[in-house]
Image 1 (cartoon, rainbow, N blue to C red):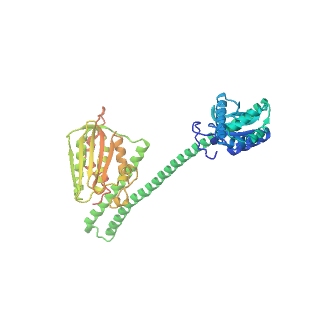
Image 2 (cartoon, rainbow, N blue to C red):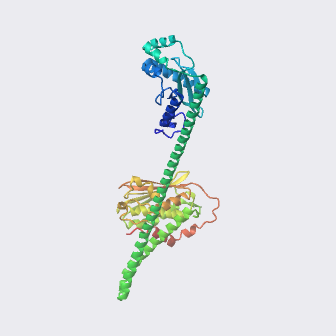
Image 3 (cartoon, helix red, strand yellow):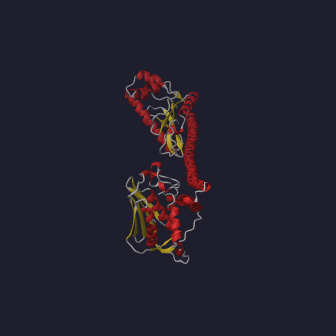
Length: 472
């Protein structure tokens, strides 16, 4: 059973897969000696899988000494085994050399796996002429062959049947035990695979925990950086106040108060994103769909950041193939999506670059594209950038701050409105983010709070919050 493959399909296994051949050999040897009867075990095709036990000189020294005799014995073994398997019990027969043999079939769940053969005996002496003819047929020494035939054991039919039954019972018991052991090994292997799979899940869980740890490290940095800047700015203002030069330092105050305000916006943005991501993960994030002209909304948002981009010498262009398209959107979330994509585009586009915002009516859905001429994203990161807290490597982020939360949140905000988001990118040539929103309407549009969102100061504040991690 050393070569056991753990396959329990009886069509795919051999007798040696379920039987301990060493143990079978010992049993066969002891049986042959105690019963003074020859024995050997063969597979279903008649090929020996054990060494012969107590073979007579008649068979081992003469019959099996010739190629023809050996071949006839194999055919006889195969025939006896198949006949016994068909009967489902031991079968007693006369072999080609005239001796009495028996075949005890080894059956597993009714399938013939092999045969234990015994015999090389007689129930009465045969005519000398029979042996002379056989010797001539096989080209054997007639005199010595006849002498060997006289040493063949004479026994009763009853003893032969008893020996055959004993071998049948023992061999089948051993094979059934072996098959059950094989099934247990397969079960053990299946459990091993299951444990391995669970181990993989555990490793994935550990990796998730590692990412969470990385998150807290990143968030800690993101929180500490603006706080340190605010603290330094405040300390500087205090120093001006202490030495009495505050009145003469209005420009300085404006400069540093602006820095403090921008970093306050950064903290607000980060905290808002964390809160919203947590709500989305827990399923408590509300979506307020309203029938609205999405073309107007996207254009207004784009135009609101044109001046901001101009300060970095970046040109923003908005284009559409339709002037009006009413669909159900969450206006507030739509603002955050477009502002976040524009913020990323500006952040990673060098001076002199260009950002194209296009809106196309595709009948069943509206497609919004934000395309830049910036640094681009490595191919192996194109899907990962939508995972929480994943950032493109430091060489691409060195000159741009960020927690890696934005795009993950954008993806969630798009999907809770029934949409999809894709990205195309090429290193040093730029990136294109494509948002697709379904062209559907909602029946109840009574909760319209759009006018509140048209407030210029509120929109300006939202823009400053979303753009707070870009330093000009």
